[in-house]
Length: 345
Image (tube, rainbow, N blue to C red; front, side):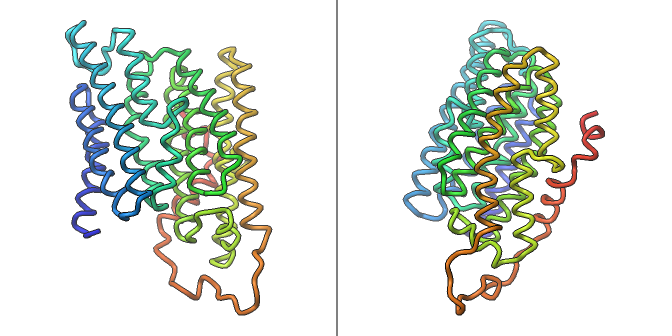
């Protein structure tokens, strides 16, 4: 793609997200989401492959339907109460429509089917954008309207997402699909706590973006797309292999890595609000996600592919790319646990 066109598309995508985050009016929030969607569609379909075309079509349909439902929610509320303010949503059907639209945009269960298929049809870097940057605008709107969202709906969606994300990732051999189900599970943890402690949702979203970015940047730099590709990660660099192991374990929520802190705090908050059965079920579902993370780390760090002596090492074929973003995200995703009390205050 032409660098100028690529710059325009990325700038439009960032501008759309920024506009939504700064909006207090339903029309401007909807406009920002539409700018975001229309900017990323060419990025998804730029490879001119049938899978990319299919992914862009699915993504466009689900995002357009969600935006239309969100706009209908705002119109209904304005018709009944005469206000377009985001924080003044007084109609119960409007609240339900808004919650459904934003959770569909995020890919939460039970409207999660599009996310693994879309990620499978795009390159790894585009999948990284979809699983990180594209979650910011809908989650911002949910955090802005947290006191208007029905709590039983968020708890049900959170529980379903963590269970489906755990079970869905177990039988995946494609790393992009595995990361899609990981995204569904992590977003389930965030939506479950959003009506109880929205600041904890924001903290979890920040850590989720950091963890996912570090893991998928390693996959992008090592050109790993399947579990079979993960067996030759060690041929790139022993340091990258170790960081890949730690990033996946941090995604799984193992102490003393950074990924442990949001799960720990969310479970503590749920138990303090007398939701112990829900917290127990979510903790067990986190073990399912941890299982396929550990499987990937075992394959990538403790096994070697069958090969002969003349096999070329990957590091001889091309120079290392720019590793500054990878270094920053990796360090953040591994060593934030000691300063967790400072970050949530």
